[in-house]
Amino acid sequence: MFCFQCEQTSRSQACTGCAGVCGKSATVANLQDKLTGALIGLAQSAKNTGLPRKETCKIILEGLFTTVTNVNFNDETVKEMIDKVLEERKSIVPHCSKCDKTFGEYDDYDLNRLWSTDEDIRSLKSLILFGIRGMAAYAYHAMILGYSDDEVDEFLVRALDVIGNEDLKMDDLLPIVLEVGKVNLKCMELLDKANTETFGNPTPTEVSLEVEKGPFIVITGHDLYDLKLLLEQTEGKGINIYTHGEMLPAHGYPELKKYSHLKGNFGTAWQNQQKEFDNIPAPILFTTNCLMPPKESYKDRVFTTEVVSFPELTHIGEEKDFTPVIEKALELGGYTENKEFTGINGGKSVTTGFGHNTVLSIADKVVDAVKSGHISHFFLVGGCDGARPGRNYYTEFVEKAPKDSVILTLACGKYRFNDLNLGDIDGIPRLLDVGQCNDAYGAIKIALALADAFNCGVNELPLSMILSWYEQKAVCILLTLLYLGIKNIKLGPTLPAFLSENVLNYLVENYNISPTGSVEDDLKASLN
Ligand code: FSO
Ligand code: SF4
Image 1: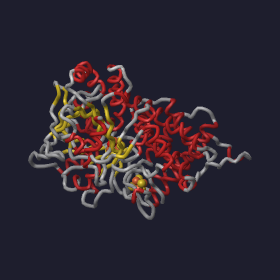
Image 2 (image 1 turned 180 degrees about the vertical axis):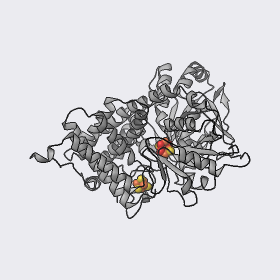
Image 3 (image 1 turned 90 degrees about the vertical axis):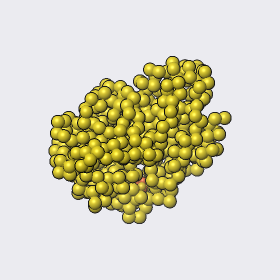
Image 4 (image 1 turned 45 degrees about the vertical axis):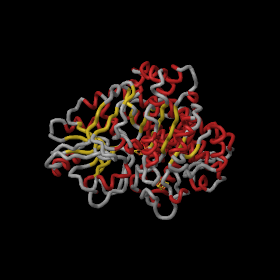
C-alpha cells in the first residue's frame, strides 16, 4: 500500500506496509486505489460522451467519498463500490470494448503510476485528487438534501480525468489545483444553501455537556439529514439524542433544535472516541468520517450509515430504518442518574450557532467595536483535530490571544478550547463557533463582509488564519482560501507529506503560507 493523504501519515512521509496509521489495511488501501482508478476511467468515458448524467455524478461522489480518511475500512463494500463504477461505465459506453480505440487506457488506471511519478507532478495531482475527495463529501451531503450543481459535477469529472492524464506538466496542473479551490467554494455555498434552506439559519445556542439519565443515542459525523431522521424516529420513545464531534453545530439549526430530545453534546473530537465510547451505556451512529477502528469492548454498539463502513458493524442502509440503533439504546438503558461531563478544559457547556447569517446581522456592532478600538484583531483558529502531539498549540494560541481579539472557529479542532469562557467584547462573544468544517464558507463570507465594511482586501484586515488540518476536506478548504488570494496562513501541526519542495516553495512565495511555529512567535507575527 501507499497512502499519504492525511496529516497523521506514517513518519510524515507515507503509510506503507500492511496497514496505515488510521487502521486501514493494505487490502483496503489497494482497493481504494483501484476504486480511484476505476473512477478515473468512468470520468474519461463520461467526458467523452458529453455532459455527465446524474447517476454517473452520484456514483463519482460516492466513490470519492469512500476513499476519504476514516470513512471506509471494509474491503467488501469497497469492492461493491468498484463494481458499481464499472457497471456505470459499461452503461455509458456499452459498445466500447468492440471498437479499436485504446479504450482501457484509463480502465483500471493504476494509481501506482501516480505514486511513482515525478514528485512535483505527484504533488500537484495529489492536491487535486485529495481536494476533490474532500469536495465530493460536501457535494454528497448537499445531494442527500436534493441540491446539486452542474459546475461541481462537471469539474469532478474533469479533475479525475486530469489525474489520469500523463501528458500534463506542472504549468498545466497548477491552475487546476486552484480551480479545485474555486469549485469547492461553489460546493460549500451549495451545501450552505442546502443546510440553511432545509434546517433554517443557525442561531447562537448553548449546548450542555451533561448526559441525562435514561436511554440515549450518540450521533457523530457531518450529516444533518441523518440526525433529522433519527430525531423523527426516536420522538416520543423516551430516548435522548446527543451529538458528537462535527455534529455539534446541529444544535444551532431551528429545524433540528425544535426536537426537545436533542439534548446536548457528548465527548470531544474524533481522535478521542476509543476512550470516550468505551464505557457508555448507549449506541453510537456514524454518519461520515471520522471513524476509528472500534475496540472489541464497544464494537457491538457502533452503527454506520451512508458511505461509512467497517467489517461486522451493523450498517443502516438507504431505507434509513434506525430500529437497530433504537433497540440498542433501549436495551442498554443509558445512565441511571444524570451524568456530568466536561469539555477538555473543564467547561460544562459549549456554544455554537454563529453562522454567517447571525454574525452578519451584528456586522454594524462588530465594525463599531473595531473602529472604537475595542476589538483589535480577529483570528480564525479552525480546522480538524487529530492525535498527533503538538495540537495543544491551538489551545495555547486561543488562551494567549489578546483579550481584545475575537476568535472565529469551525470544525472539530475547536474542542481543544470551545469550553473556555473567553468572555465578550461590547456584547460580542470572543469565541464564535461558525460550525462544521464546510462552514468555512460562512467564515469566508464574514471575512469578505468585513473587508467590504472597511473598504479593503481580506489580506489587509486585522485577521489571521491559524489552521489545523487532518484529512482531505481540509485540503479543499485550504485550496479555496488560496484561490481567494488569502495570504499568511499558518498551517499545522505538520505540513502535508504530499507537498514536494517545489510545490511548497511555490505556495510560500505566492501565498506566504507557513507551518505553525511557537505560539508566541505566531501571535507576534499575526499582530504586526
Ligand atoms: Fe474533523 Fe474528521 Fe470536519 Fe474532518 S471530524 S477531521 S476536516 O472529518 O471533516 O472537522
Ligand atoms: Fe495513512 Fe492517513 Fe492514508 Fe490512513 S488515510 S493510510 S493514516 S495516510
